[in-house]
Length: 395
Image (cartoon, rainbow, N blue to C red; front, side, top):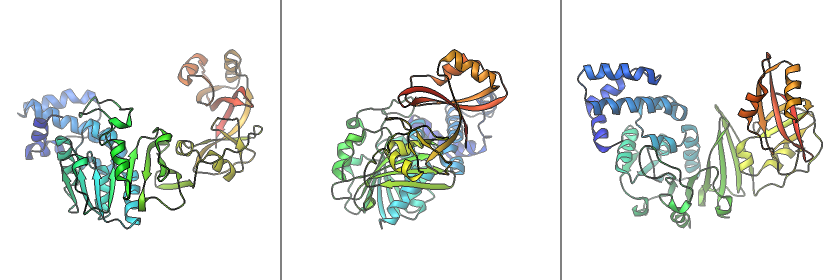
């Protein structure tokens, strides 16, 4: 989004027009809406700006729910914005630690700052990009305890601040078509700046879930978060924000349910053992946090094979930390024999899970060309070091 587009969008005419648009449904509706708006005398720039916002609001519903309809976005800002339920956990951690004045350095469109302000914390939201800072100001306008400043994180005076939250930009500069950065030194602000700030301060640092574990300081609590089955972030917590005795955590959010597995270090894997009647696939946050062994012991299971994140057990167990399957039978791993066996069983809808084998599930599904009427799950993995195909059903 260019500055001129933002000015047009934030005008009374622009905001009224945006709120009057019907909900965005598909690209097929765009031509008709553009034609109607141009006939009404609106400029091409304003029409483009409001249609872009309408599309982004629809996309943002998965992160912000009903709040999305009253917010503004950039494409890049929405991409990196924290989901509202996750941001609420961030804010709750600050409040539980007794922190009342928060600096959100690199606030983006203001997702985390919204959660801080909603808990009546005083939040100073800092954003270096002028357009993004203006959008954050709009999104935070309903909250008197929030203020947005357009400046670099490195230049902020933190003497009156109790705690700091950092969400470094991990994409190249811009508002659309940005690229992901792989070197933490290229983040804005840099990882080095964040770690230096964490010395003697209460800091929360949001990073991508695939962040290099070797770069996690021993003083930090590392918490991987999954939301509705997708691992969305790694949070590093320092000072009063780090919980005593916890260095590894997997936070699992599904709808309104919240569950957490914690430990003081990476857990040792449970011993491997024979395939039981049940198989469990740990949630991605549990895998990232390397707490698979703790989970296996919690559910009375054992590892199916070394270096593979599957747990097997002899009895069904309900757990929020893994998806469970009942093993129906073991089939031949050879593709021709597998295809014949699945057709004989009338399988038509096939979910394919795989770990420890070099298979593209989408390609295999096409080659199997199944046409039955029964659903099933096929788990491709190694059992005792051998490639194995397991026909299963979800618990």
